[in-house]
Image 1 (cartoon, rainbow, N blue to C red):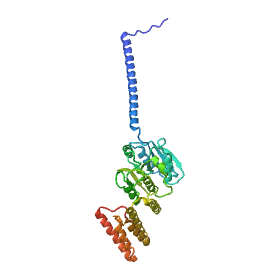
Image 2 (image 1 turned 90 degrees about the horizontal axis):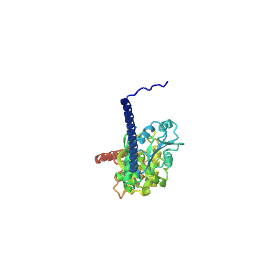
Image 3 (image 1 turned 30 degrees about the vertical axis):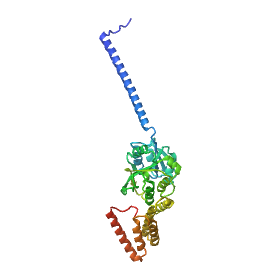
Amino acid sequence: MPVARPHTPNNVAKGGDLARKKRSSLESEARIASDWMRESLAIARSYSDMANAGKPTISVVVAAYQAERFIAEALESILSQTHPPEEVIVVDDGSTDGTARELERFTGRIHVVRRANGGCPAAFNTAFAEARGDFVALCGADDVWEPQKLEWQLQTIVEQPEVDLLCGHAVLFGRSEGEYSRPPGVGVLDGAALKDALYRQCCICAPSVLIRRSLFERLGPFIENFGADDHEYWFRCLRAGAIFYYDPRPLLSWRQHENNLTGRTEWMDECGDRVRRMYEADVSDRAIADDLFRIGRRLVDAGRPREARRAFRQSLRRGRHSASPANLRALAWVVILGLPGGVREGAGRSVTHVSRVLDALRGGRDPVLP
């Protein structure tokens, strides 16, 4: 027996058709909106690619040794840059603490290279060999970059493509506080003036540096097992004609702690003296006179008066044609060191006190004069 179909009133049937049509219309609008969003994103990416077309790429290299306490903060400051780098290469230089565990937290965001312990210069050389960016930025495993560091430096490269090495100001924090010494001038630096300044003291903070990779490949690696490797490298760049750019804004906070405060001061001083001998021909007589005065004062404090007097006399000879602030002081020390022992000590204290009072009246002590 046939089953009778329930009767559906015409108005209910029409209502169902309207609902289906409305649903179909909404689905169509959703598809159109989705297509529009995809096209908009594609256009946005296209404009972004156009904006970045031709811009140099940046690799960041980090040398890490026994860095479990600080490496995470350093990497976060790199990865959260307003202009992130194309790659971050971390060389674990034979750490035996929890550095490896900390690095695992950044899996997929960084490239880790592990090697036997060879020291910071060796670790950076390993990292540079892995880098593929047009420019390479150095960062310590315990330092903290300002968020706009790479953005500012990239903007400089785009505006002044002749620049080979960019650096900036650094603020010291942690166990000791202060500011890193500044080079002479801002923006593109005068090579001769920078050589003289570097001869007196290392005024380029390595973790602020962004260097053209092709320049590094041409000049070769950092000197390994050497306590002034960065100091020597900046001289090497200048001798090759590299153009330096200095940004006076703080680009990073340079952490001071018990493991990086120089426990090997004497060795590092010896390495610094070797750098000066290597590049003495590149600097002015005034710079050499100032440095010889510095050596003389160091020898006085070490209780080696004869060697100190020799250094002061050499300072006078080098600085005789310049207006070096060390000249008068060197002459005074030559006289003082020729006095009998008991008189010499009292006279030395008096000269030091007077010279520092005069410095204060002039607005501050020359940082190269002890």
